[in-house]
Length: 112
Length: 113
Image (cartoon, rainbow over all chains, first blue to last red; front, side, top):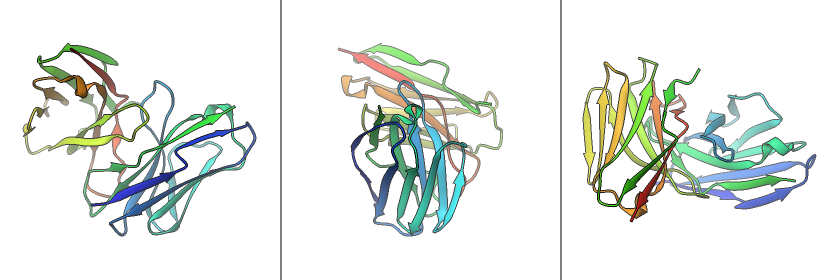
């Protein structure tokens, strides 16, 4: 079964600073990969998903971007963070045409 | 437009009793439904799922019921345990692969000892 790694686990960044969150997947190949954000007291908001290397679909226009440089690597970035970017960022993986998505442990981002 | 709705943001249940979490959907093209459980500061974990060709799926203490005509599904937990206290998300998919799941906003379940 697949294992999803995310780092860092927690991050405190000032407004206007850049961001790079990384997600890597083990135990599978050609996964669909997803970035979600959960703001405090809110549900899961889909940010980006990717069905293959270099293929990124954006669900919400904002100052975040995503890239997939390798099959099992998914990166979430920002050039300048906003206070509203604070939240819990989750990477998820789906494989083999299955419906189930499996989530990583998440990154807690606090923008100050 | 919210296609998957969990209208109860929270639910409290006594230990040993039944917990019933509800979910409604609007898109008749959804054909697969899932429930996830999430503890604070952790990623959601897959709990149980059901295909639209079924009306019930059971796994231990967890049972999911699907009423397609009402576009409604529910998750039953019997008996409820304190460790079940978490946020539960309902999710739906219109087809397999390459289509993101649509999640509800979640219901926080508190099981009181």
